[in-house]
Structure formats: structure tokens, C-alpha cells
Length: 422
Image 1: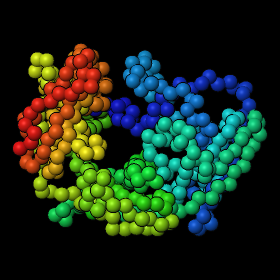
Image 2: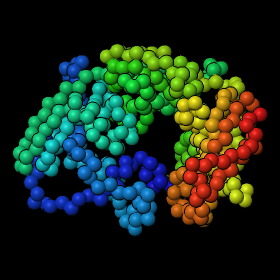
Image 3: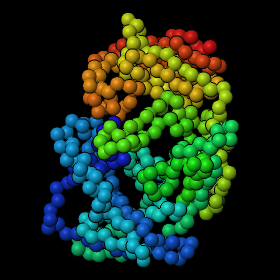
Image 4: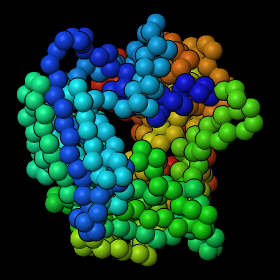
């Protein structure tokens, strides 16, 4: 995997935005202030401070679907990395005394947000997708709790912020034989007023929390509420060998093997029981235990219904047949096959979507990988409709076949055949 591709995963899409033409003579404002920790009364040292525009989506965003075709892609990538390392006119880090200063801020209306590990932030209860979308519903959370400032040209503004310590959830991720599961990423879920679970991004760092060598984890800086934690087997990993070349970095993405388990032993989201967390409370014992028994393989192929030839690209999703929610996903291999391991015994709906015949051209050999497929710029030769198959997993379910119809005849139709489980 190329290093530039790895960098792309870490860069927000907005980093590739083409900046609006700037006028060197345009008047700017200065914003300064101080951030204090509410629980200690001491300075919030090395906290991040961001000015969030009243309408963040007014900035033009690059289209990720065409970024690789842009002749200036390498130049834009270099600019994005420079911006990430240097920061922007709308962000700063406090010093040892908790003070910050932002120069050359364009006039306008902003919301000032401070973040520090372990402390509450208006952004901590939002998912990454919500932060990127930044619609009115998402911004409401920020507007209700963040300090609002209106900057006039050449006029300084001073803002003092106080941040409060949040609560935490902690526990152990392990296998049911007692051995720890290190390197697992726990995901925080918050129960909303409508009874649905929402994934939230507690914490400041872009690098997610992972379980340590003993399987211990701790998620902190969360608001009072009802929560659960889920985690998947660490089947997708990036590793680095020796040397400075791109070949020293490898990524293994076995998404189809990523068995998800919820705190409390639940295997489906509908069976999850919430944990009540009070303001600033430290709640321990929220363990996640991966089962080792009664897990099976689901495998088969995706073929064109018209002539039975295997399609060489697409997505396979294992779904809860009652809730119609996804349980697991895997890519269709270039020979039309798919395989998912570690499937618990239950009834599932197996669905094939996005099935296509592609000219993979220079695509690297090996398991299907959405990133490498995008980098190879594979040419689509033919597209197909979706197909579904109801299966009951009580043992190894192999040799399944999903027959996808031609796209032109797929309106409201699905197709599938095969042994519904063995």
C-alpha cells in the first residue's frame, strides 16, 4: 500500500479543498483568550481551541471521487499535510498558562470550542460523520453550548473559556477463555431520546483508543447519559516492517471477519442494555467478551443471473432479517467469491449490492480492498441489480450462490439461490 494512500485515510476531505482566493490587504481580526479547567481552577495547558464558522459548509470541498484524477493531486496532498502540521488561522493550542492567540482571522461569526483530553466539549457527543456533514441539526449542539463571537475587521476579541471534566467508561476486552484482546478499538454508543443508539466520538485525538496489552481500555471526557460499548475483532491492521519505502508498510483489511460484540455480552444492537453514567462519574467493569465457540463460516459466490458467470466486484452484507440492519460486510473477490468467518449461529439476510464486472487493469493481486480498487481506477464494464438470500447458520454455510440480475431489469427485483444454510 502506498504511503500517500495511508496519509489520505488520515486527512479529512476538507483538507483537499481549494482555498478561496485571498486578498493580502483584506482586513482581519485577532482573537485571544484563556482556557481554565473547572475542576482544578488551573490553566488548561495545551488544549486545542477552534473557531467554527457559523456556516462551515460554505467552504468549497474537493470531490473525493475525482481527487486521484486531478493533475495537481500531489501538490494538493502536500498542501493538506502542511496545513495539518502547521494549523490554520482558525485553530490554536494553549500554552503553559492556558492562553491562546489567533491572528489574521477573517471577519465573521464564529463559535469558540476548546478541547482537552478528559474534559467535555460541544464536539465530543458528535460522530465523525456528523462533524463532516455539519448541517443545522449538528450545529445546534455547538450553538447551544459554545461561546459565540462576531468579529469586525481590524478589531480584537477576547474570550475566556472554562471546561468541565467529563465522565469515563472503562473495562477489559478479552476472549471467553480469559485471555486479553489487545489492539482492539472500543466504540462508544449513546442512547438517544428516540431509543436509538448513536456512535459518538468522545475524546480529542484523531487516533482512536485501543485496548492495551492486558486488554484494558478507558473512554473519557463524556457527558452524563446512557451508554454502551462495542468492539470488533482486530482483523484489520496496519503494520510497518524495515526500510523507508512504501513496501515496508502493509495493511490487512479482513472486514468480513470482524465479529462485533457489545458490552453485556450482546451480539446484536437490539439486545444491548444501556449503562447509566452520571456527571463526572468513572464507571468501570464495562467488559467486552469475544466468544470462541459456535462461530462458523459463510461463503459462496456472486454470479450474473443471465448467464451464470461470476461478477468480479461488489459488496456482500450480512443483515439482521428482522431489523434490516447490517451485521457484517465483505468485498466480492475478483473471482466472484466471498467469505466471512466467525459468524454466530442465527438467521441472517445475505445481500449482494453494487455488483459489477470490472476491468481491474493494474489492480494489485490479493483480497478485495476498496482503497486499492479506487487507486487502480478500475473501469466498470457492466453493473447489476441487488440480490438477497435468507440463510440460517447452524454450522459451516458454504457454497452459497447469489444471482444478481442485470441493472436494467432490477427495479424492485431481487434474485438469489443456494442452500439456505447447513
